[in-house]
Amino acid sequence: MLRRIIKSKLFILLTVTVIVLVIMGLSSRKNSKLKYVSNAFTVVLTPFQELINYIGTQIDEASIYLRDIKVVNEENEVLKARIAELENEIKELSGYKIKNDELREALNIKQQFSDVEFLGANIIAKDVGNWFNTFTIDRGISDKISVDSTVITSKGLVGRVVSTDLISARVVSIIDEDSTVSARIAKTGNLVFVRGDLKLKDQGLCKLENIFPDVDISVGDTIETSGLGGIYPKGITIGTVKEIRRKTSDMNRYAIIEPAVDFKRLEEVFVLIGKDNIEKAGEREDEG
Image (cartoon, rainbow, N blue to C red; front, side, top):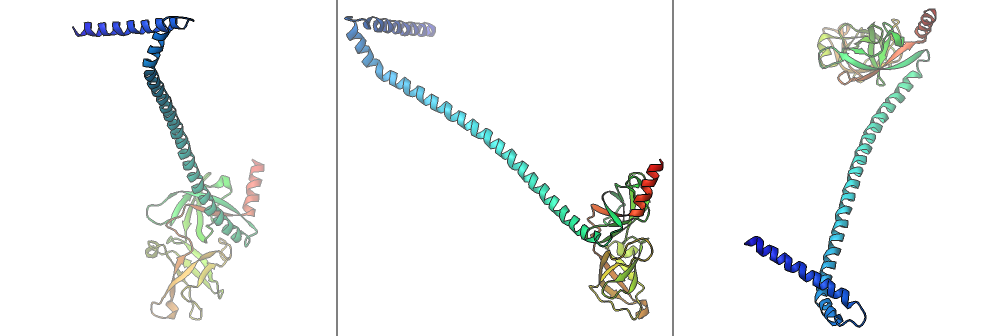
């Protein structure tokens, strides 16, 4: 029953539509008697036409608005991606600035040593523990590094190379108990020894020994390499005096040294390579 009603309504609507179109077509002729009928239909249909035009306009505007929103969203995504790129670039530039500052300080050190070359190296492994008392770097014999090559940062002395292979080397730092450095007090030139200590190592500190009674030493004094012993060049900062201790008398004085290098956060170092090593390596390559 419902289907019949729907079909009958559709039939009536289509019939009326056809009649209207026919009347409008006939009334368009000159002197047509149906012209008045057409005018009447036009008057009746005008509001509907305006409504349809209004709806069509709103639909067009809505589609334009939605299209604009899509464009804006796409532009926002592009801008977000660009902002992320710029933030990464800023982080990289900040990292480069820090490294550049370190290199500048290293170059200031280099001015003191005209007979050595500086080679940057990354730490790729270290012994168990919080402190970098022994570790491995990604440079070796192929980079002209040899046993006893001095290792530093822009802050000061790190230690020395104790073994090498083709592409890596093992370093013992000044806080390790097996380390001894011939040193001097910067303000007086008095010779002393900086040694690693098993107990102090766990605090990132080392010990200053060979302090004679007449040696003028105070907390805060700078300790540097003496150049004696044939390993470390003269004038590299080791650290500062943190505390002076006495066992039984002035003859048994020793001091606690706080290294200039932070042995808890090492990542990169410089290896000092003597020019004679470079020349010898070059000769070996020529012979090969």
